[in-house]
Amino acid sequence: MNLYWRSHFAGLLIVLAFPGPSAAQAQAPYRLTLREAVDKGLQANLSVLVAGTRVQESEGTSTRRFSQLLPHLRTQSYANLQNRNLRAFGLSFPGVPEVIAPFSNYDFRVYADQNIFDLQSYRSWRASQDQIESGKLDYQDARDLIIRSVASLYLNGQAAQARIEAAQSRVTASQALDKLARDKHDAGTATGVDVLRAQVQLANDKQAQLVAQNQYQQALLALARNIGMTPGTPLELAEPLQYQPIPKSQAESLLPSALLSRSDYLSLASQRQGFTEQQRANRARYYPKLSINGNYGGLGRSIGDVRGIGLIQGQIDFTVFDRDRKGETQELASRVQRIDDQIADLRRGIEEDIREALLNLESAADQVTVAQEGRDLAQRELELTQDRFQSGVTNNIEVIIAQDGLARAQENYILAVASYADAKFALARAAGGTEKNIGQYLGNP
Image 1 (cartoon, rainbow, N blue to C red):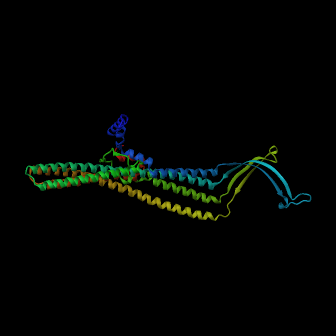
Image 2: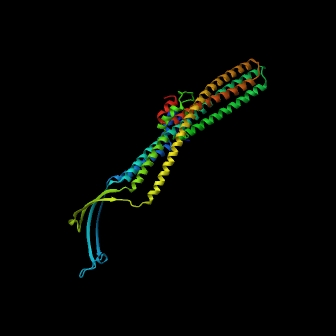
Image 3: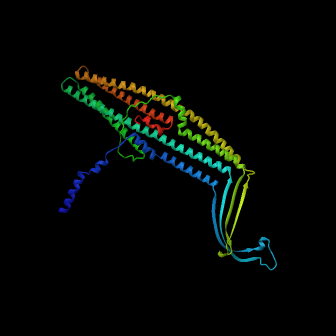
């Protein structure tokens, strides 16, 4: 190998052995806060994007209906060469040929139409305006649902992260027990069974730690997918699971404001108003329609012979018989009845959601208090049994039982805190205005 290739090969080894700072930085996990997760979800979630396009679609529909109330202008120009069969029109004179020789003419014209009174078109346009408002409310409701969904996914990740920390603490305790059992066995104050029990407990705790780590990574994958990030992106939750209480509320005080804030409820009300306008448009089908139209332009046998001509006329239309109107009347009446039933059902559903969220919130708060006391007692029990085993008063069976009790107490506390946080998110959704008022439910506005 000559000197040139040796130098390049050595340089390649150096690059492989010592990667640059950019490669190391690319592996650093992204620290994601709950607010950032919510913002990313609102920007990238498919449901929000689809709801936004529906608003644009309804705006286009309204523009088309409004065009029926505006003037319509068009131009038409042509030049032709033609002949005529006079006999076909009932014209026959002696000495006049039946077919006139070819002749040409030129026509340049501007046509205009304007509806002066068209109540049906006006009511249809008003109905489309209500549809736009309903679409905007549906869009906001989709955003509120995404906030609820992303918050729950983030909460799942926080709970999984807390389980990793709890599992690590149990592994640390089991390692200490294993070392203590070995030392006492070497000193002749413990049996081989004590050592074996400690080893089994350590293996079980390590396996539980691996399971918790895998569940945490799965929670991050689901979170990344739903906020528009590549699932393989390294993530790290910046906010640990914490108990952050909020002031207590009463359902009677929340229900009236929820009916004024819930986008899904307001959307149904807006849809009903749109159907009402459509019913008025249906009744207006028998009203007269008054319009004015005309044209102006030039007509001549040649370009130089073009002379200005025009026409203006008023027009009134009456519908004498229209069987379709009766069918449309029945359709609209059924839609109004259906929307009334949906509004009544949703009203009861909102009250149920609020009361259920408040019940869960109160119950979860009590559970957190009890679980925290149970965790402290289990920790104290473990410390006492460790002292008893170290002093030779008993074997390590009591220690292992206490470790299992502490594991259950830690899991109970994690479940209680997660249940309280989830109840807060559920209450935020039930009370309406989730995007506007989410800060007071996060606990860190």
